[in-house]
Image 1: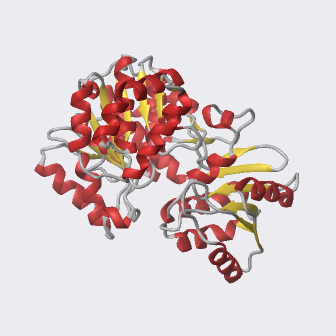
Image 2: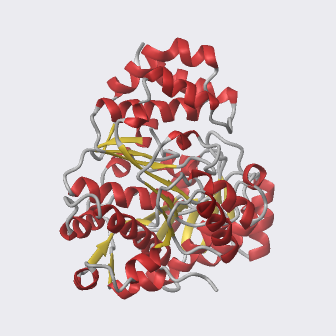
Length: 439
């Protein structure tokens, strides 16, 4: 089997759709020898922020000298972005061997795309003798394929309305699904949650006798031995926005708890890991002519924090934007949040997925008084957006992993682009302030 054939076979599994349930993945893991039991894991759920927290924890553990497997989703351009070992995507050879060796089983049992991807990640981490697996939940938590882990720690970053058709239409119902990753006796760390979400999670934690901590109480505790030392660190992070400051707080709280059993994690590793993190297309600014901004916010809460961050970075300047998203998202609310940042909206079809229709885009743009143009491919729209922005302007590509992945050069995805800027310089009190629970 060639690499191209292996990729085609993986994507062919999408015809089985999303399968919420653990019977298939448990059976597949048993067949593989339960590779997920060979490394310590940290399991991370949340509506937004879970990818950033995963990337931060992965970066710190690697700086501390651990061999780390990191599993995230979705990807931007290449499936292998989802499965990292020691900071690098798994090799084409490793991916192809797995699909070749197990294809008869995968096809015969009708394992889904995500079930297969999750089993592949477990197998890759086990074969690489990873010390840790830092694992992001794909969808929800309770019935997600990653819920086959027996983690050292579980983390829930943030709860908001998203995937209503699958997870429910209330904060409490969505929190219940996310809290499905809580295991008997395993500590749970949560970010700043709405009261209804915290209450739902606390009920399940009590039922499972799992110690529950907010990131704020961990980092502000007078009993925290490293408190004064952490306060003195000059934190630098290449992820922008108050929401990323909160994500940093959740990651640091998780690592502080982990340090109780892993003395190899020094404070210097926390500082260097945060500084070195690379998590592309999260308010990512690439200097040039024009300046490029890439962002994959794909729900209303994500777009709102993007628009909140915009004036702090660019003031009153506006961007020419290539923007679209899936038509099953609350795209009208997303657009309302984004509109104040834009001078022109360029629309196009969404690659690989049903997107907002042209007529709907035109109507929304007209309502906000923003000029609108339509192009038949993302690349045509991107070229026009750059031209309209001009050498001294701002050009934004946003709204979907699919769209950003179609445009962003592969080299900018796998490593930090030359001259990427700016970074956040943070004081300890900034991190604590970002973690305060909503009233």
